[in-house]
Amino acid sequence: MARAFLLVMDSVGIGGAPDAAAFGDVGANTFGNIAKACFEGKADIDGVRAGALNIPFLEGLGFGLAAKLACGELPKGLLPDPTLLGQYGCASELSSGKDTISGHWEMAGLPVTFDWGYFENKTDSFPQELLGEIIKGGDLPGVIGNCHASGTEIIARLGDEHIKTGKPIVYTSADSVIQIAAHEQHFGLERLLDLCTLTRKLVDPYNIGRVIARPFGGENAATYTRTKNRHDYSVPPTSETLLDRVIKNGGAVHAVGKVSDIFAGHGISHKRPASGHDELMKETIAAGDAANEGDLIFTNFVDFDMMYGHRRNTPGYAAELERFDRQLQGFAKHLRPDDMVILTADHGNDPTWPGNDHTREQVPIIIFGPAIKPGKFGAKDSFTAIATKISEHLEITA
Image (tube, rainbow, N blue to C red; front, side, top):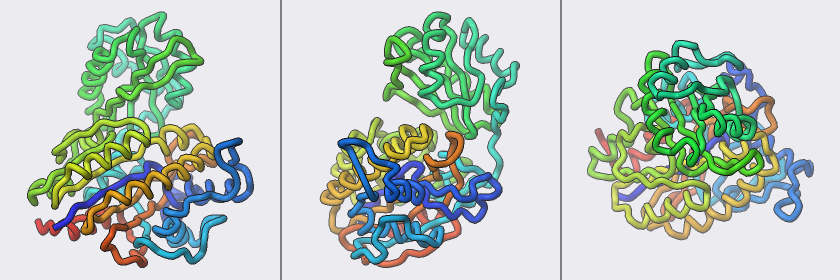
């Protein structure tokens, strides 16, 4: 029995979702459109990156070929016939949403076939009854925001008013989510977390997937920055997942970054909080050093989505892909002989696409490790193929 690593490149979709039209996302292709922008010289950053997307390790693993398998076209500037180091494939999503929870639960073997609740109005997004309960339960002077927004934008816009009035910033997006932002010092981190715990209970009747605490620091709009003390309050999985089966099989699940929050702590043996790709990769390697045979190390690399996808920053997204390529190559040196790594995504977030929300796309399935024979894994009709592959590798039979 060996170990498995499940590494999620949050939002790095590869286009070609068969049901993209139902989501208004026909043509969305996070990876392909970034590669195209780079090839056309539209994603250069002085002193940081220029020209075609430079991801030699990911190319060798078959990332470009996975993208071609999903949408029928090799991304611009990538090699058509790289020397393969891993297995490549892609998967379509069965779940009814294009959100974080749905993508992660499905890759863990639990598709979300029910509909989440959403706050669809762009302004005056939340029912007044719900806001009244939040204000009363949190002993607040009120709330501000009450709209769809980018987290960084709304903090810059309303941070001063929040500090002056003591009213937290409450906002949402196209996801099934309510987010509450507050200043760590002026409002208090523990008070924010308590408020989100309360709100989690209040939104259960609305079938909302996540409540997210968004603490920030700084003294003015130019310096307000979200801190690493974010916390997600998710609905618990509705049934058993791969994580539970790993533990039943005698293994342990090492959750790095926000993975534990996504599963509401269910099926988690060891929680390793981390923020930023450098710290996330460091903790992934440390988890690997501590893990035993039969264990699963599960990491979400959130910066692709949070820092670049939602902010529609194509050059920044490209530069982060190139930086991650180097990080991943360094990570691979720590693998043990029987380790298997699956590299995937949970949805898309095409930075060239209108708006600032997730995009419905297929995801890559890249499989590699010292003993993994390179080749084609193929196109799968559900992210659950990931759970199946890991179960086979860890010899989980029940």
